[in-house]
Amino acid sequence: MVAAESEIMNPVGEVAVREITSRRVDTLAGKTIALMDSHKVNADVFLARAENLLKEQHGVLETVHGNKPRAGLGAPREVLDELGRRADAAIVAFGD
Image (cartoon, one colour):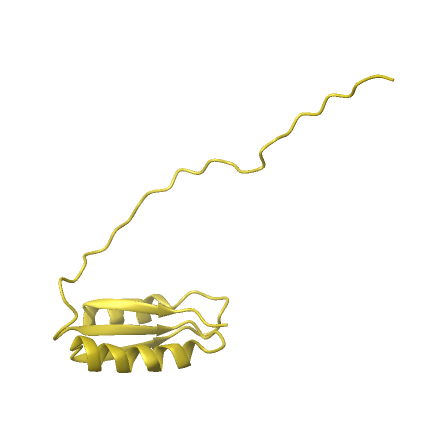
């Protein structure tokens, strides 16, 4: 009987990732927060609850809403630009 050799290969490749960080807010009090609905199941439920908590417990002044057309698509550039102009920070909801 002949011993067989096996080579185990790692299928994970290496990808160079450029880290992009956004400006952080020092407080939520008095801020406008963008809420982006990913259009997935229950994303709207999450955002409604988050909106209430942000206003009641963290002093958020206003929320603005954006929607993606479908769960599998990115948000249109004009929606992102508008939210970026109007909000100090953003929350993107993922449902399911």
